[in-house]
Image 1 (cartoon, rainbow, N blue to C red):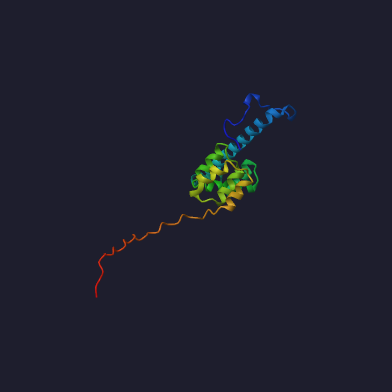
Image 2: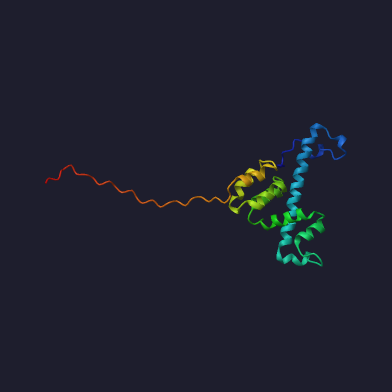
Length: 176
């Protein structure tokens, strides 16, 4: 997980050469920077996929033997079919999950953290789940999604009858 400003090293301090020039002080900053850039690049690839799914843009990618956007992504971007399927699934839910998609674009959420959200979370829970997912590891997000009842809806308030006032008893007694 990468949060802007999280790295303790600056870009100038992060080595870009062979592994032997990396020491323990720059390792953490380098991991943070790389992870953040990878997540943000996946966000850009997701934006390309969203554009690809727009019906107005179908003429740009539909060609001989390419019938599905997944095929085009796999061929053009050099990715596997499962990643292409996941990108298309996430792009189809982009309007439902704007907070999650934006977290991926900013590098705060990885694509592997995003996919369980895309597959299982209803649109109304986007804000809640993305705030939790940013704090969880990749393996914890599927457990959160699996162990939470996302189909729960708040109970409708019952209309209570107004309480009846007790009948005041008179102090006089009935005589027979």
